Every structure is written in C-alpha cells, then in structure tokens.
Amino acid sequence: MNFNEATSKIEDWETSGISKILDRSKMNRSK
Picture 1 (cartoon, one colour):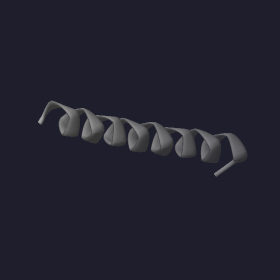
Picture 2 (picture 1 turned 90 degrees about the horizontal axis):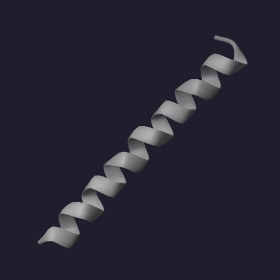
Picture 3 (picture 1 turned 135 degrees about the horizontal axis):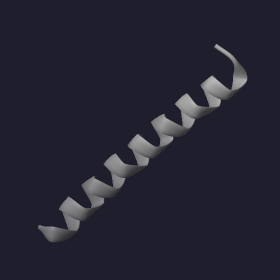
Picture 4 (picture 1 turned 90 degrees about the vertical axis):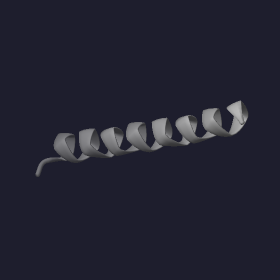
C-alpha cells in the first residue's frame, strides 16, 4: 500500500464515520 492509498482509505473512513454521526444527531433531533 502506498501513501496515497492509505490517505484515501483514511478519508473514506472519516467520511463514513462523520455521516454516521450526522445521521445519529438527525435521529435524535426528530424525536
């Protein structure tokens, strides 16, 4: 794995993690 591949994987993980947190906060607000 080269540096660019590692960076893109980290970015994908951060994006999916952030979207999960946003989904959770939206669900909490709608209750």
